[in-house]
Image (cartoon, rainbow over all chains, first blue to last red; front, side):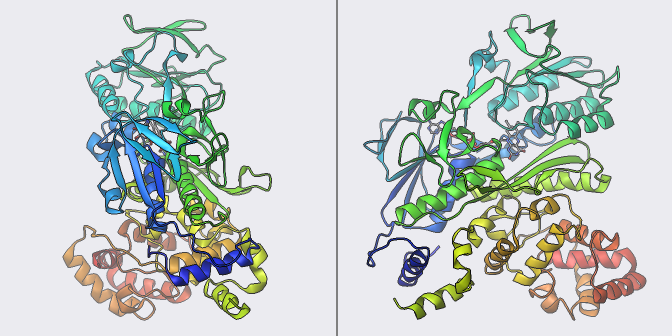
Length: 431
Length: 196
Ligand SMILES: Cc1cc2nc3c(=O)[nH]c(=O)nc-3n(C[C@H](O)[C@H](O)[C@H](O)COP(=O)(O)OP(=O)(O)OC[C@H]3O[C@@H](n4cnc5c(N)ncnc54)[C@H](O)[C@@H]3O)c2cc1C
């Protein structure tokens, strides 16, 4: 958008006066030359970078990200199913550079909230007026004893898209007909609550068409999961769920689905009651905020970052904001849509704060699509506002799930809308 | 700055002076509008193929559409659930935000012959209300350069009464169907999709 000019200034002081703020006498507090450093170029970080630059091109935005490109987790389950290529979920940072974002290929190793500096593995020290931390998740490998970062090279979690997505796809392709794919689902809270169940659906979809004697077994520490009714209805329709010949079986925590240990050598998972062998195993361990959020002391005991939901400023360290999966924004889920929405609220607040303005009222949305089978998509949506108690609340009477009696036409449209969402969110974030 | 300057600025922003206290704790049109971009594209210009571009449409059409979703008068997959999340004031603020934005078009695969035939049909059956080849924002949406998948959904919704067809449009569509059959409707969609 345009640079700070006189008309904007008049507008600014005018509205501030009306809102009852103390602005004193006109005093230019523009954000020109102010510095924002963003840690992590995923959905949250990239969106924040773009939207800050769109709102105020006077702000210098530096985004630090170790990878040259980004693979979206969303639609990576379609890669596993062979429905799309890994390249179709790969995005570069050229779009952000076009918005004037300074993209630095490096890893942040420390953040000093007192000195207001960020240090990188490459030895750079970047100073900031405001820092936005969006490192996504880290995996708690030992939540499944026997699992580790090293074992994950051959028994992938594929919960960060990229090379592991490709590995898991190759294993599915190599698996003989009649094999068993085991998905170990994580405990709450975790990235993308419907994700493991969409993954089971799309792997079953692939197997049904290519290796119909095979099975997908989900071992779950939980007793219920996101969109459960809609998933199981879809599984009945496509994969014989609930029958002896079902291609998908879900074992809840209560039924012994919690995995107590894993032996990579024999590809065996020890449950509370029995043990399970898999031909292909996908372990999605417990999760926490990305490591740097922990190193920087931004996390609580549970490993996630508490924030003020109006600005996403950390309640631990002033001047540092946390968005995306790493932040605590419940009832918003840890989703890409939510990360994008949170980042925009944060970007607007950061621009306001750098310009000496009181941040405005936020508004947030989440929509998560899942593809269950051919021409069968489902979704959950919510609109959120900031409640009087200072907490995020979903607007009552709004949002919710695809109706259980949705027509075939509407379920088919949801698949097309899921793909349209993918086109738009990736462009809104990286374009 | 005097009262006059402040109040005229407020009017510029589309707010009545008396409504400031409510407006002060309401999210801005931009804040609200930005939440739509995940599906409808940055500033309301969609990358397609099924979510429509909502940039550049009139505030009246935006408000009508959202209100009919909110009331359940218009069926949809997800918008009926989302529209219920906003007050009438918020919907108006979003309407103003999007009406200001340019409708950006992307190239769409289309059949040139069908598009050409569609252009003629448009002149005959549609141009009276959807002026300038459907380019103009009027009582209805902007058709020129709208996503073809969306246009097909919309036409299907009108035909299957998931969405109320305005009377004049119903008559024209009946005529078109009688004269040209489904091929005529398809040609129209190719015409709109061909426009850049
Ligand atoms: C299988 C699957 C399916 C999904 N499907 C959907 C879906 O359909 N819809 C939906 O809305 N969401 C979906 N999600 C969730 C979505 O992918 C995440 O919620 C989203 O990516 C979160 O964004 P983020 O910015 O918090 O983290 P990320 O997108 O993971 O980005 C974090 C970035 O930070 C970088 N980083 C980490 N540490 C550092 C450091 N120290 N220095 C610099 N950079 C660092 C990383 O390299 C990474 O690029 C899905 C997830 C999975 C796993």
